[in-house]
Amino acid sequence: MLGQVHDHVVSELGESSRTDTIFVLTAIVFNLIVLGINSAVSIGATEEEATARYDLILAVFIALTVLLNIIAVVALTLGRRTRRILLGGLVAMYRDNEVAKYYDPSLMSNYGVRYLLFTGVIATLAITAIIVPFIIRFTNAV
Image 1 (tube, rainbow, N blue to C red):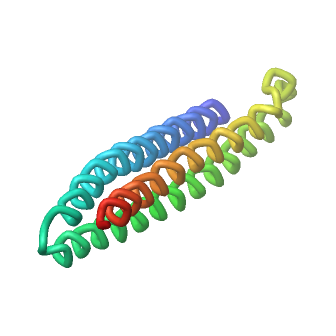
Image 2 (image 1 turned 135 degrees about the horizontal axis):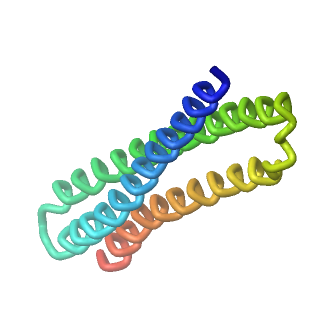
């Protein structure tokens, strides 16, 4: 029975990692695409008379960028918490079976740092996808 519990926890860790990867990749790709779209829209807003339409499109994409990135960060926070709980259970199981010496406890803090770095990448790209189009929009408007 212990082997089945171990396999289940390891399986849950793998599933959690795949889910986190999907959220990270989705946020990164979305932010890069939105950066391109918003930049193009910002350039159009400086060259056309119908700037209200371009500004509305820009506002919608910025709102979507904020929303998607909040969802991604919340998902990563939940993934981080799930990983910590699952690894805590594994370490307890290892300790109970006197094999805990084979699992370095610093791995748990390393995973936490990795999640913070992923969040930093997502946040940096989101800020870039929002600020750069504004710079284009308002510096070319003169």
